[in-house]
Length: 84
Image (cartoon, rainbow, N blue to C red; front, side, top):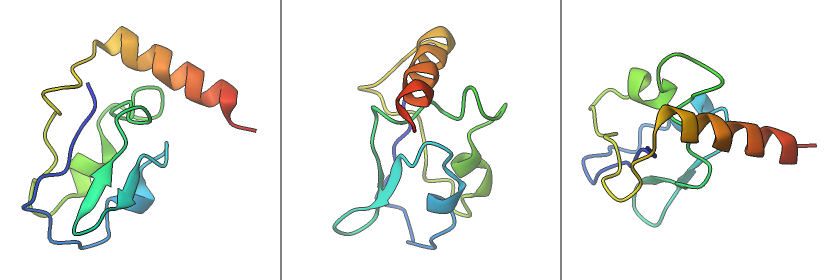
């Protein structure tokens, strides 16, 4: 599952530096998450760090990018192997 940031985002800037995969970026109006980079922190942490730190709880699972923990771990391994 990839996560998404809803329009309830207040642009507080705390989520972006917490993402170990650099999946979070500033979009046109609010922060956004690149689904192909989001592993919900699988491989890094037990819990998604952006969700843990978000003060307005605006980071749910993206309904169009539902993935199993195994798939997220495979994505983590793929991302890790492509990082220099």
